[in-house]
Image (cartoon, rainbow, N blue to C red; front, side, top):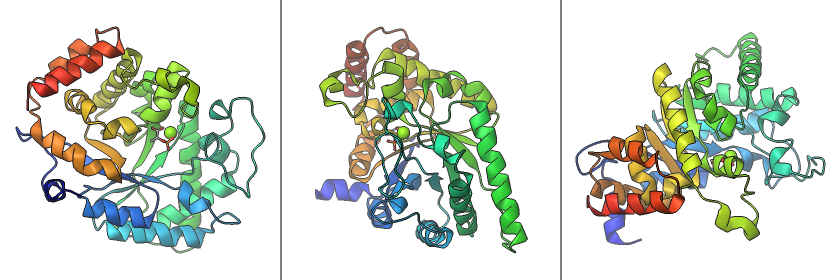
Length: 325
Ligand code: PEP
Ligand code: MG
């Protein structure tokens, strides 16, 4: 690690003209969390809970999960920890839970779709999360939400989990904030309605790009078509922000695009509250953020929304940043 980057870890996440943008970490283990904190992450925007379920012979018990969530929450002190509920299927498989062979796994039986059927698995995880929320810094995030009914069903199960715990004598408050991933075009297009159902949005650009462009994110042959700067993606980001702003809920971005410094003017212009990324991107993105000025970013985004090609959008983002460093 260069000394210059290392010194960035302790500096505030803000632009050269003092506009703050929280820079959070995506983590898949407690070890990664410790590293993210050393690299100056503001908090954890995405804990991919899949890691708890992988490399083992069976489902983790409620107590096993509780222990990991509790330790993660404690490492963060009073900073938020966003725990995403199990997001398996598609590219993520468990040896002990064989899923049916599918023609189109990423359009198939996965994530919340499984959990709303396997309510035993879902409620076990939700109880573990609720029990771990002793300090009140945990947030719950649902993946792959496509309809209002998905959120409502998930929230009903969350209420059941709370009731079960209350009956078992758990006494700490259980009013944990609940958010949803915006990673299906349907969710972005209905953001105004979803924003009335949840406390926050987290934009998953990895899947959002895959689904809006019909480009399998795992297929190398068409990797050149997988384009986060496609104008349609920008329009979905805008719809998401408009819906969130109207309801007054915060938005963060947790897909890989959040770790690309070229996208920084987009987040500043759209007004997201946080970006969350792989640990290895944290220092570089903060370093670049601190070199930029935010003035004019909303106007830039407004005019980018009229562009018809990714090449033009990228070029204008590059020019804009170059003129402000
Ligand atoms: C996403 O889809 O952008 C995301 C963050 O989730 P994952 O990469 O785990 O599917
Ligand atoms: Mg995803």
